[in-house]
Length: 307
Image (cartoon, rainbow, N blue to C red; front, side, top):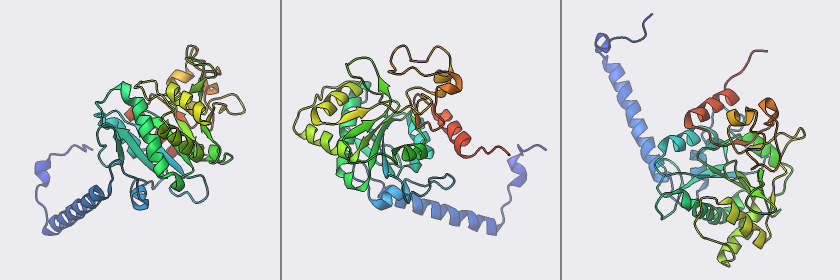
């Protein structure tokens, strides 16, 4: 049967159908107006705003009664609407609240606005703004994860991983890289998770002007240097019991491919390849295209093999 029908064959609408269409369009306009008036731009989100940004109806984490409260902060490159839309439609809705940080507002989402021209050099400025923002809502959440807009996060696995950790510990958590500075630092693309205490101490350090605020695209290094000065330590020991990574600095295709076990020496701990690279309880993948975000979401939350 041909599903591509000629619309001219079905041009006669009944009055009842026309009324039905008008009523639904009116409702849609009303709720879009309400949403536009509720969404904030760079301001602290209210409870109602956080609920508007958490519209998950089909996944296991549509409610969070017992686990740690997680706020997600996403570095967004202004103008890349496809990335922001994919993040909003997939994993971000499973956070207990989220915001983007960008040089321009993200439609339909809370945005921390950075008064700069968009470039890779302002990533560190965005992270500073995220930390200041998080400090303002520190009492509402336990943990704050920073990611990029091409990072995919399995929020349920993150919440489970954090169950045994205390948000009063001065720590930020992720996957450890071995280059650039002695003692290592964490991958920003794979995402790092700040405790509530870490946010407080970093913000105090910013106010005391003890950190380096020079623009750089490699925000991980000045962040690590700043953290050490204010008494926040990093924890990159996040492999599972089989030595597989939970925070992945690249996408599954790269990590599954033989020869990429330590990403040319960047990783502190070499991983396996194929299924030995990535934990069954993986938390994040980086360099994920918008279309692959939708695919990951489908494979994780919708595809159900018959048993």
